[in-house]
Amino acid sequence: MERDLSVLESHTEQWLREVLAQARHVLVFTGAGVSQESGIATFRDPSEGLWARFHPQELATPEAFDRNPALVWTWYEWRRALIANAEPNAAHLAIAQMQQQLRRVTVVTQNVDDLHERAGAAQVLHLHGLLAAARCRQCSAPWQHHGLTAGVEPPQEPREPPRCEHCGGYIRPGVVWFGESLPTATWDAAAQASTDCDLVFSVGTSSLVYPAAELPHNARHNGATVVQVNPEPTALDDTAHLNLRGKAGPIMAAIADLCSA
Ligand code: OAD
Image (tube, rainbow, N blue to C red; front, side):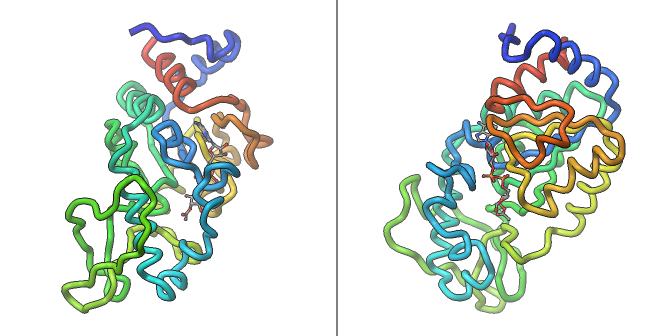
């Protein structure tokens, strides 16, 4: 299918064709903005971001969960319902397509949704965990969700989290909270990819949350070309070789088409 490549100016298109053709290992690093066109609110958007409606410290820390497990659990169950009802968008599909077409593409995401995988991407590194991978807060035993407990509307009443069948502890969502360490093997693999890659696409992230935000900087330090896709300026602007200002869907679709051309 022919796609409109006019989102990329012709000299930008030519430059991208060349770096893509030369790339041995591409790192695609994504944040909440890549799922925005699937209807999932980003974290820091002032008008609709989740953080605008709820104070993060009330919801996204181990202390918050211990203080009010029902509130925190219900909030994440609502987010799980939003994700389950969402579909991968053009950006997720384009990234999966790039994995098929280029020699080597490592996908690293800060997102806790599974939209990259549902678009067909393989071996996605989830730096901040996966919402669906719940486990016991006390003994860490994995816990299997059975369907959804919330709808897409924000729930009115907090509901107690389920209890662990082994130790009776509360079940917690599979995300990394503020103050917690990133999953070691996942972080090591992402850091290794940032050292090894020769081209990075940083897509839909404010580049503010460390250590994840280190990856494109580390890649550039090791000689990689850095391309950023974001409608707004970010903390990565000065490090990126190219800043493509716009939504991830049309821009990543145009870039994926350059790979197949
Ligand atoms: P943010 O909400 O901080 O940033 C989202 C970025 O996406 C912003 O820079 C937007 O301009 C951009 N954006 C919005 N719509 C877009 C679109 N359609 N296409 C492309 N970009 C778009 O989200 P993250 O950078 O992912 O961590 O936040 C990083 C971490 O902060 C999250 O993983 C989460 C949060 O605290 C944890 O929960 C541990």
